[in-house]
Image 1: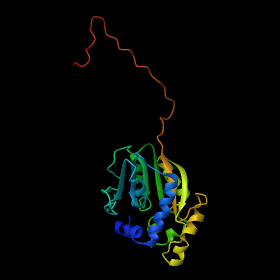
Image 2 (image 1 turned 60 degrees about the horizontal axis):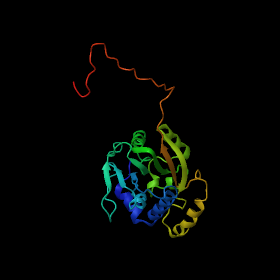
Image 3 (image 1 turned 180 degrees about the horizontal axis):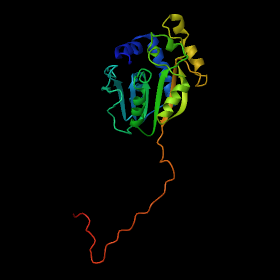
Length: 247
């Protein structure tokens, strides 16, 4: 079940812990996607905290928010780019997205299979997707005071397996949210230290969340492909060939 958009907005934009989480996720995302000049960038779920860096240079930015979650206008200081959509029927033409960010969309979906099919559909050739999910072994998934404590948490292996089943090729893993999920002053003061140390760890040793970058796979035809020459058209003797464009 998806979280309510008001709760997500209050966490990321009106709480100190949420703003710290936003900074951690965005910092890690920028490491692998530093820019998106001239590209179409889409986010599904509640990905708006991560979309702002691409507003200036991207050809188009779209924030897709599922119906059960609700929608809010975003960004506040520019023309609205958010849209309320069916969870598995996005108003985007096939193959038109270059970068896709899924945050608070996969782990809370009751139709994860169809959701991944839709994500694959909208990505263009060479398109990349960034799936961000709660770490099953992390502390954040055990505290329901944050959005990462809801839905189905994943291990790295579980997420990879699910992505491969839907023709995605996992390429890079990153961890985020190494700080303790508490707004108490003692933990907030040490947050930067935990994040700095966490970023030096391997991607498989994630913190409160996994970030998996995956590319879209388009499989070639199976089996041996043979070329068949088209037969040359012959006209019986005494019959003139038809004139192109006439019935």
